[in-house]
Image (cartoon, rainbow, N blue to C red):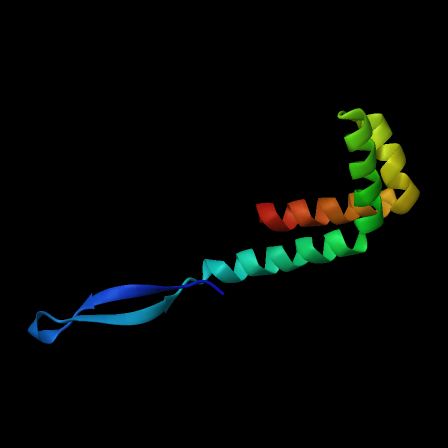
Amino acid sequence: MLVFLVSVKAEGNEAQHRIAYDPDCDIVNEAYEVVKAYIRSNHMAIGQLVDVLIEKETLGSDKFRVILSEYVDTSKEQRETTAWTELVTY
């Protein structure tokens, strides 16, 4: 949750502070939780990709897909990516 102080002009020229809530923060927090869950559920694939990148420094898209397919059902990932893209562009 993102909160911040807002100064409000009060009677007698005194500044009064209140905490304001940013409603866009809910969207950011929800996306953050989705990303954390995705990283947790795919940590083995991410670790393998990191190992290859440390060794070779670059990785082509074909090799990336081969490594990823060892850990993840890529057809399912494609459906989730499409659904997420539709949600974001809505």
